Length: 420
Ligand code: GLY
Image (tube, rainbow, N blue to C red; front, side, top):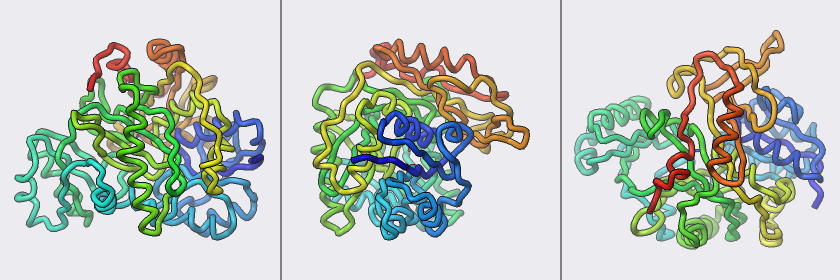
């Protein structure tokens, strides 16, 4: 299938990586992004539309007439933008609003997992502040407190400090959001992205994110400060085990409820002594893992995503991958993951492996920071050591006042310090 014109919805590093991956597909020759960022403007035509509006996105698609629409972020998916595009006749990569509840409501995800017999943390939903203390007493000594809604990874607090756990839960409840308390899952984390088309499941390479803001996994959670792929410490057969025990049962359960999943199902897992257990599901490509995973994809991305969007994943040839490893290091703005400082001029952010996330072009034509995670710097090499070296070498050329990054992305794996 020839996919000539593609519209990518979103504005982060994930979307820049998707666009660059699509550009490498020889059948794709016209790329559009909405709203995009300063980096996507170099490979695609950016369109300033409100991507949370079904009407605005459909109107844009009617003007552009794409052969494929790829939806990056969870918010438009949960709001039914994929449904609206499909109703208007556009092949769309991304689940329906009903299936996107696997990310949109953590309580829904728990219900699906229970029905599918998938291992996950014990959980309780608290929606009344009067019940909070008794519920906290039933968890610990490490508390996992999640905002039961979309919070870009920052709604999760994992802490051995009961007072900190209580403060986060109380804050969510004060804002009218139910809270999910979970038992802590032990074991190294894996992000496994799977293309899913009903009951058909095709895994991509496994990756690992680094969610804490600081080196050595210190500090608060973020949307992700860096990632690497593949995982040298993951035993052979683990990906097949995760597909068989986790992803396919959930896909089958969603299909049996009349809400089949079509798109990218992201399983966030802890690899514990008893096997993989689900930390969370997301209904879209992960950010920043995608930036590393797509760096190693050899198969044409446009044809791959189009196969899912048109219900023909079963006919897709086996995916091909480059040998070696890829790493992405996130450069974050001052004060991220708190309210980030924006509007700072970025210099040196050109060349290979520089993926834009929170950037825009200001009135003077300068590239400036416009979000918390500003850039993702990708390195690739024969192994993790070489990939890390290239990513950090590229990062050294970039200047953003007040910015910070982790120096240890992929380091524990490189040094053989991760084991099951
Ligand atoms: N990397 C975490 C996420 O995409 O949610």
